[in-house]
Image (tube, rainbow, N blue to C red; front, side):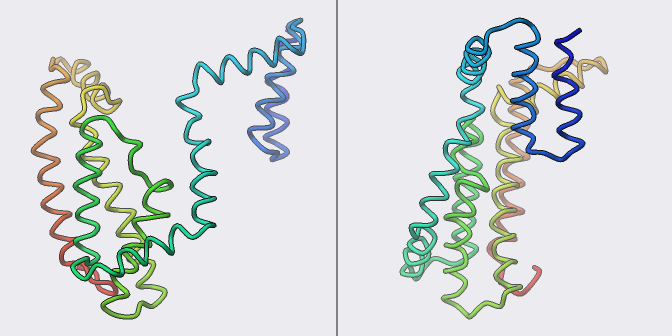
Amino acid sequence: MLTLLGVGVIVLGFMLRLNALLVVAVAALVTGLAAGLEPLAVIAAFGKAFNDARYVSAIWLVLPVIGLLERCGLQERAKLLIGGIRAATVGRLLLAYFVMRQLTAAVGLNSVGGQAQTVRPLIAPMAEAAAERECSLTDAEREQVRAMAAATDNVALFFGEDIFLAVASILLIKGFLEANGIRVSPLELSLWAIPTAIIALLVHGTRLLRFKPGTRK
């Protein structure tokens, strides 16, 4: 029963609104010690769990790098780069990113783009620079450009990832259909996701090409 002390630590820590990661780590340590493990054995168990699930924790290693790049002027360099390309408009830039994001998601490379690692430090500043070349932006219009950049990533990923066989949404759809007596293979679901992805590209691509900061087309 002493091993259940870890549950009490979690409940108490959350009630006190302490740091969640710290609470879980202390709870695991208490549980290991209550089970009769040596402190070094508990720490070794932490290391083994981290190593076994390191692909889940990889994003936390990338985020500090992105933050450091931003502090060193990544956004400013991105704005300067896109500001020197006359043919680059907000719509064309975001449409190009949409196509890239959808194609990479279709082959399972979901982490190639993303809100934290791509949109915030690169795509949104570049879109702002493209818009500023045409006219000065108000704060509301600047937020509108950023929102459209974020939406472009979301839509492209949502409709692109279903083309990839080994994705959770395909397995969820397959399980739901089988529970209702409809048997389909993951390949069939992926193939039927292609027309949907194309329609999403056409619809959102049209919205992007018509997009002008300060309007709601």
